[in-house]
Length: 580
Image (tube, one colour):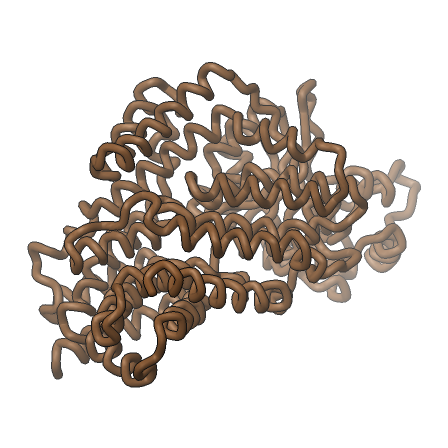
């Protein structure tokens, strides 16, 4: 079997596992790297070179820098002021979408979403609209913003590494900006004028404000020995009349169906789902909530979403109480918890989960940062220190100027900026490394040599020959449109890093066959790899807003289909104008 066939087979299996989404993406990447090593497609001395690639260094540094700036509170404060402007809803939303796009051009997309999500939810509430009217457009805006600079998304850095390997030079910091800004501008115009109007408006669906909560109630205790105990049927009837649905009864770590319960023990827990405040509902039906109110003077209740890369993922809900000496407690969870087999506290946390957390505000603020929890409905009260914020922004700007104006390696300037911010204690010492998304780093480091094997084995040239035959003597705009569309469709099922690894070498080979600039088709791949607008699984920001917005799978295509067509058409036109 030829090396090209072996490399293609390894990559196809890896792609299948990525699309299946049942195995961690970093584990899939490591397994693919191991297979390439065993099959002789990657030399032993090159297997770990991906982890020293400048792209990996820049991603890690940007995550640290972005987190440091986020902790200064300056971006959140500016966003809050923009949200408070007296203006029609469409104008307020447009300002916030533009802000989110600009932020995501210079920091992690999730951080940009976390900063702007509470403001968008607040604007939606103030206008009497569901949060879903703004959250999907917000997620799309952060994706669009990532197309505009070298550090906007890891896929851009991967393509820069591909360019360095095959053409001798990486992309400059703003080389993709003309095409990226044109595409992002058209996309934002669509989202502000039309896109948000296509979002669903469903009553009773979970949203960032007043969503449906799953929580546990303790059975009521008789006031006296003479008082008759309520039968399960009577109690469940009261709960239904009060505005909730009984999901089951948890007994000895097992969940029983309501119709299977003849008698309620004091240790039983009734699992219910309702849009009413859990404490108010418990009082209404004469039961007790299993979580007591905090006695702290600054006690607050906040709905949060679990971001990708959170250290809480894979651990039970009770972890939050255990790690905070029970100062913070999970009061309720989002609709996914309706499928719990046992106690709510034992349910495993997943990315995108929503939790209602209660406890002292100060403790909550620090735990949100540690746990990578995105606050949805209670604005974080971060004190902004103007001088400190200005210094952090100045350090970041110096890194960009050194890379763009003086030609210093981006990895060097951003690593120096990250080290400087850490040394000046812009981040707590425990957060310096926790701010890095290590699964993403492993994914990048492992997939770089896998992608190189796809090119060096000749597999990329074979795929390029097929595409070259299909394109024939097409004009540059047609080739760019086809490349962007093919990459976009692939990115529906894969993360953008894997998509860039595959399509980068193919784009260069196709460009050489057609006699056009390799940069033209590389930029087409860059745009397509970040155009994940059709499904909630295409980009982690899409998934994070799915629950808060009350969206269904098909809603993404409803809003994102025309946006995808617009992205392909705009990128093709601009690439043709620049490189034609």
